[in-house]
Amino acid sequence: MSIPRLLLRPPVIISTLAIMASLGVQGMLEGLVPLHLIDKLNRLNDNGISFVILGLAFTVLVPIVGKVNDTLISRWDERMRYCLMLFGSLAMILAMVLMALAKTYAVLMVGFAFFALTNLCMCIPAQSAYGDFINSMKLPAVLRDIRSRPSTIWATSSTTALVNRLIYTLTIASIPDLLQKTMGVSRASNGIVTAAFGVGGLVAGSLTGYISDRTQNRLIPQITASVLYVVSGLILFFATRFYQIVMFRLVLGVASSVADTMLFTTVADVYPANLLGFKMAVIFVFDNVGNMLGPLLGGQAYEHMGVNGIATIAMALGAFELIMVLLFVRNSLDIRRALADSQVTQAGVIADKVDSSTIVSSRSGLSAQPSAESDISIISKTELNDDLVESTHSKPQRMHLWRLMLQLQVVGPTVSIFVATGMQTIIETILPLRLFDKFGYSPATIGIAFLIVGGVLILAMPAVGFINDRVVSRHGEHMRYYTIAAGALCVFLSQIIMSLARSYAVLIFGYSVFAVSAMVVIVPAQSAFGDFINSSESSAMAQCYSLAWIAEGLANISLPPIASGMYATVGFLTMLMSMSAVLCTACALAVLAFPVRRIWLLRRAHQ
Image 1 (cartoon, rainbow, N blue to C red):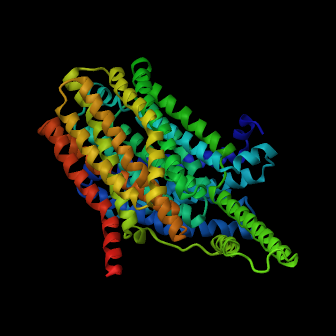
Image 2: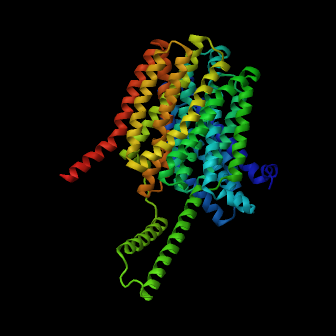
């Protein structure tokens, strides 16, 4: 089926409109509710509590709505999905009326929680309808083969990383001009825009991993992220006020969080630990291609077409990713199970051959007693077969998010991602201001700075991933934590260079050193998540990788406003030196806790 015919099928049209409407309204409310609390209800400190209530409502209602959806379909047929979507759309209107007429904070929160229910009544059946429609299609044999390969998961995840970073960085170079010149807001508001991205990412990151692991489905979140990219572009296209820019970044944060969680999770699903470092590094190469081209492309589009040009590019990229996911992406857990079954079959064949050859040799009198080497070979093959059968057919252990957060192997990488991505966000927020204030550069020229740094990363990233895998294969997985600590030290040294820079060249050199150092932190940290889940035989892969986005969301919420305020009051040097010193020290201490405890336990065992 061709792409135009696919997009014109009623199930695809209805499901897409339902998701766009529900998530678009959610993005609107996440931007308007904080403003309404401040302007109308005079509640300055309740914004965080409001989103906690929304997150709890989603957490409680997701399994309930999913169960109702499945029950309706099992009793009647798949058309009940569309009845549930219709009910959700009508109930959402009632929720909007309730929130609009609310005179107290309690009534407003009741409406907010009711909206969560109506949102799920639209999104869950709509996303399930995508899978039903794709599964019902008779795909060509070549396409089925492509969809079943781990390399396809790796390629589509890399492409998703490129699209994700492109859309995110399109507005970086133009934010100072758009906010300060066009809208006339203060420079401290730049941090609020970045924090809005983190709020969306935090809410989505805390839910995406749980839902994906609970439903054992990786495809639906990827479709959702693609649709949200289109929604964010629509919001930006019609944006004329500051709160609309905040809404755009909020929805974009949700989309980016879902996409990032899934792209790393799906790769970890289908590749072993000794290959994850290089695979993750290549994904970050594509991520940094987007980081390199996004500001340049966005700056040029903004200068020639204004904000509408950036919005059009964002919508086009979102539509491209949606088509790619629908055509080429399969649930990675299905591929994982197929690979495991294939390995079990191969191991069984090998064991049968070894057994038959042993019998033949003993009957022919060539060897009255098998050698020790042959005994070891037979035992190892048999044990290998038994282990694979057990790992394939045993039920995975459940591990909830709060238990993951208590594991030292997870705490260190999570804190390191918070620090590395937080410092990256600080630089992305402050560097355009620094280049504008000190050198007077235009948005297009500012974009060139990100182009240079992106080029450096493209050259360095494969080497970072390759060296990381070699170190782990030679010395063990605990070496990832020492690598992260060394990367944190290099990050601090790069910030010293940037803070003391008196010329554009030295500033960009320091930024390039930071970018490579940050990847030395992030690549082994992302690989450590997959190592831990695979070794613990847990089904919480997506939840573990969602911790990375929760950490990034918290960093985006908390650090840019602090950096913007300090930049306005104490200047670039003091801000960068103090924040990098505190963050890098915290990263090193957190990430070294696991290997230090490991050494202590080994010495204690030998005493």
